Every structure is written in structure tokens, then in C-alpha cells.
Length: 234
Image (cartoon, rainbow, N blue to C red; front, top):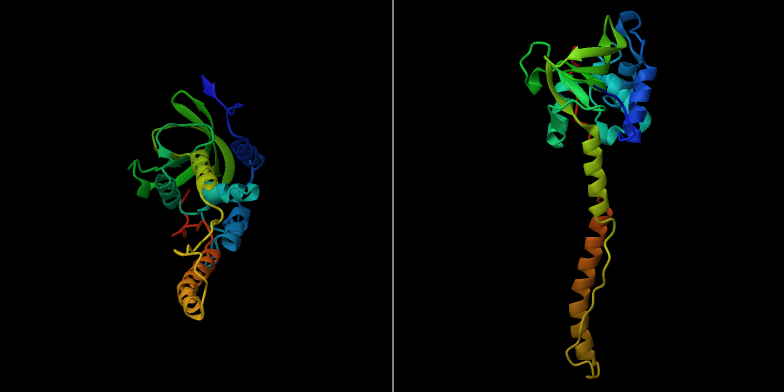
């Protein structure tokens, strides 16, 4: 029985698959140039020209960026780094799912370090998967049907998204609260001496609150795209 995109698949992954399908047939231009590599070198990594580099993972990165899914899909040219990113986000496994990112090692080592190609699963049929992959069949975007012999594992971007969404809901967005000082004998009239003593207590407290507020104001959350060591042959 074939499993294809269903109503249970998130709208984001449906959009991703739809965009990738719109790229079917795209091929390398002269010298191996692709728009995906050109985009990657101008948007993600700025220290090298990626326009004619192996681009299987840059196709996926390009599509995720176009849809605004960078943070939970990842932006990579080097496929082992992308796989390790899913491992680090506890979103890695060996079960094929529609919308999963599939990682291959054509040498059959079965290790993350040996991964050299990547695609996106669009259907599962028993022991075979149907995928959309870049840089195949002479440098094109194609839909492929493959056995799982050379599959190292699967990354689940939707699992990363759900974890990030849950974290955003539970993380404090602001610091609220009040500080108060209680005087032991409130009825005692304040004199010059007691006023000076009170100032000595309040000033350090106020300064500490101001410093804490200034520090919190500089905190910001970001997702750093891990640097690609090199594009992989896929």
C-alpha cells in the first residue's frame, strides 16, 4: 500500500513538497551552474562560490528558505552536517515518512559521516520510497523510486518544528514583577538619620534592578546555521 501526502500531513510540509515538485525537470546550466548553488553562496555561506558545486542539499535549503522554514528545516550544502543537525535536534530515525528528509550513503557504510546524497520523501510503498532529489540523472531535479538499501536514516523536520513551537510557548517573553522594601517600624517618623539609612538600603537595590533590566534587554534568541564544510557529491 502506498502512503502519499494526506490530510494528516502539515500544511508546511505539503507546501514544501508542492514547491519541490514545481522544480522537477530543472537541470544544471553551463559549467554546472544552478540557481540553488548561486542562491546558497549569496544567502547562507558567503566565503565561497557555490554556484557550480554539488547541490542536492542546496535544493532543499532553497525550497525551505523560499517558504520561510529555515529554522526548523536547516540550511546546508554538506549532507553529513544536515543529518547531524537532525540527530542533535532529536529528530532522526530509520522509519520512512512522507515529508521526511532521506539521507543516503552510496558506499553502504551506514554512517552519518559517509552520507553523500539527500532527498525528500513524497510517498512510501512497502519497502520502497518515492522521493524528489536534486543533482541526479545528469544534474537534474527528478522524482525517484528507490529501495532503502543505501538509506542511512531520515530527518524529521516536522518534529523539529513541533519542539520549537512548544519551546516558544513555554519560554518567558518578558520579565515582570515588583520590588518592595518593608520598614520594621512604619510609624516611626523619618529623620535625617533614618532617611540616610533608608537611602543606603534602597540605592543598591535600585541599581541592581536597573543592571538586570539592561542585561535582559540585550538578550535575543537566534538560530545559527552551522557552517557547511563542503558541498557533498549528491
